Amino acid sequence: MTREKLSPEDTASLSWRALETRVGLGALPAFHRAFLTWRGVAGTDEMPLRRVGQRVEAELNRLVQSGQATREGEDWALAPGTLGGFEAARPYLPPSGASAGEAGASGSSTTS
Image (cartoon, rainbow, N blue to C red):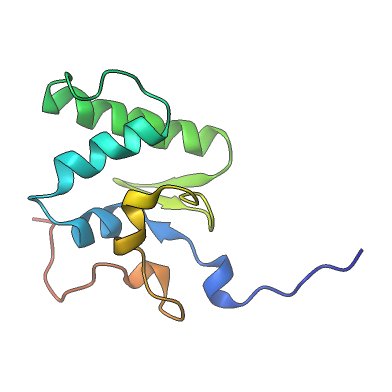
């Protein structure tokens, strides 16, 4: 059995916060609800928005526990392939050949 050599794009992690930036503020609540539904969380349509945010963070922390992500301050670095099958994320994922860490980089900062 031979092991394929991975390119930098295949091994680069994806910043969750950069992904959220690409989604945009207007579409973020629906994106978060879709993420929770994809992760198997029931009743997301009835959840208050604040609870949705809490559950998203809980699911991201579960990804950390399973080794599919790492926590980096207020961000999560998702391992390659972690969002495989999550169709709602597809339009917002960085294009092939771009560094995953650059996703959402628009020259403006979201931090104070």
